[in-house]
Length: 399
Image 1 (cartoon, rainbow, N blue to C red):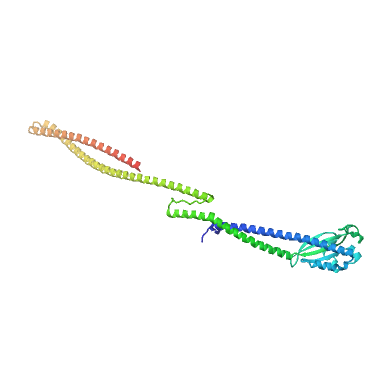
Image 2 (cartoon, rainbow, N blue to C red):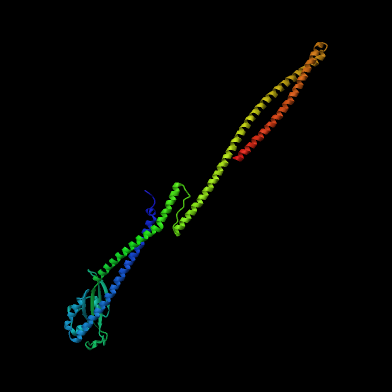
């Protein structure tokens, strides 16, 4: 199993698609949330205004009944209001000034909860509550006594002070049907948006694949072929002068520089090979010359050894001759004293002395010859050393 994280193994197309899906999801969620909030707020505002208008109309109708003496039919009016779609409660809550004069009225006209009591205290109430069926909007408007309330003098019938709260009009509206309609509209809108977002995602994916991914894949294929064939003469095809095209041009320039650099390196390598061959040839010749010089040096050394032995032999003979000369000298001295006795041997002795002198002269001549030979040998040795030194220097230079 690869140790590379999965997110790093995803293709660019997949990453871009995921990013687009995330963006579209955020846009869709934000749009849907905003639409839902706006729709519900708008519905609430419209229904709130309608409920206020219904409450005002209800009280105006009650006020007209009071003026025309038809208050006994007020329940008919209430039932008509309750028959309107969405209206779940409609009633007139009697305040203490009315109860004292006209009695408590019907049961539903009494204050039922804290909201009714706040309205009788003069507080306008608009509340949205949750029921088992959904949201419920409740509007409670206090009824105040005025000298001129829409053309009617309330104080002519009610002996109270100006702006006294006489009661309240309460109407409750069920918002569940409207909320359901809003939800259906939102679902339809969400479906349309999803289809549009899906179509946009498909179009964006196609454009990205066509404009970017396919061209990057072509570039990658060219690189793989160059790698497999080891052929730097190929180039990436550029079909558009955009960012991907600029990348293709840059890649082609880079490969061109690589190709020229490798060609230069190959040329230098060939030159180095030729120089190396020449150096190898020179080294072989130098080695042969050195070996030949070494053989000649060995021969000269052998000759010098033989010459040294000859010189030693000559020296030995010279020593023997010197000893013989010394003996002859002693014999000559003895012969002087014995001249009278060895007259017959004088001539022989003289001859021996002459032969000894000749031998000495010959030894002297041989010694001079040996000296000349040694000089020649020394010259040859010095030249041999110079040749060996020159060969070593040339070999070092070639190396």
